[in-house]
Structures are given as C-alpha cells and as structure tokens.
Length: 196
Image 1 (cartoon, rainbow, N blue to C red):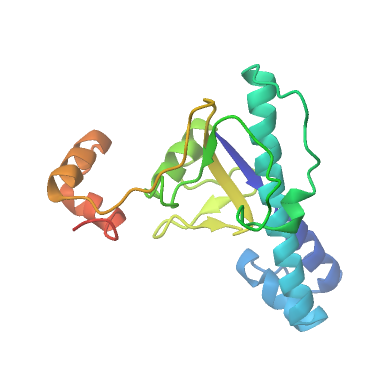
Image 2 (image 1 turned 60 degrees about the horizontal axis):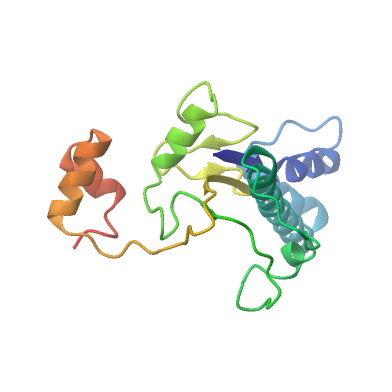
C-alpha cells in the first residue's frame, strides 16, 4: 500500500504567485489563485502536471516494490516516457509490463472508497482522514485533497489482473457489510451505485 502526492508543487507555485504580504490561501483555493494571478491556462496546466507527477510516482513506487521488496526484477526496464504521453493503454501500444496490479479505492475493481481510510491507517496517519504526506480525506465523501494524489494497494502476483465489480445483490451487500463490521444502511451508502 502506498500514497503519492503530486499536489505539493501546485501549492508551492501558488505561494510564489501570492507574494510575501498576501494572506494564506486554503488548499482548495490554490487553483483559483493560479487562475487569477497567472490565468486559467496556467492553473489547468499546473494541475495537469501535478496529476501526472502523482501517477508517475505511483508507477515508480509499484515498480520499486515489485523489484526491491519482492524480488520480481524484469530483464529490461522501459523508459518512463509512456507516463507522460498518454493515460490510456489503448493509445500506447508499447506499455511496459509490470508484475501484478495497482488498484486504487473508488475504481471499478475496488469500488469501496472506505478502503482509503484503511490505507491511511496502515501507513500511520494520525487519524483515518489524515493528513498523511500532505494528503487528507474529506470526511463526507472520502475524496483525497489535493486531488493530484494517488493511494493504492499493490497486488504483486504475475497472474494478478484487474476486474470490474458489477451490480451486487442484497445477499452480497449483507455479506460485505458483515465482513466490514457495518450495518446494511452504511454499506448501502458507500456501495449505492452497485446495489441492484
């Protein structure tokens, strides 16, 4: 499990544009500050670069974990240029092979956003909502702030594959709720898009 934060660069850029006499800007307003000081294009560009940096850090961490912690070293390491060219594997025919999968909570193969709280706890956050490495979770939605951050679980088996969790029935919901120690209402709240 790991957490990467690419949003720190956006905060530093916003601070440099703000100047020494200006008041502190809340994290959610940094993009707005960039938009007013440097234009909307600069704000969008800074957010995009920070997002790509977070994804590149996540990819590097996944590779490092597989190679150094688990001994799964590949003969040839491809250049990291693919991280900056496209985010779609369909558009890049030369995607490198990495052993295992990296799944982030909230995506189709891991739809329960509450797993972010578990990741934060296992990585030593002071509370289940952080902050950890400059990242915190919004209590109501468990959205990561800054949004240019990645938390994930790495499953480093060569035969591991992504899958999509489809619609679930009431029996599966009840089983999941029992395993998580939740009541049915809590499970329904967090998995509402999957419940039939």
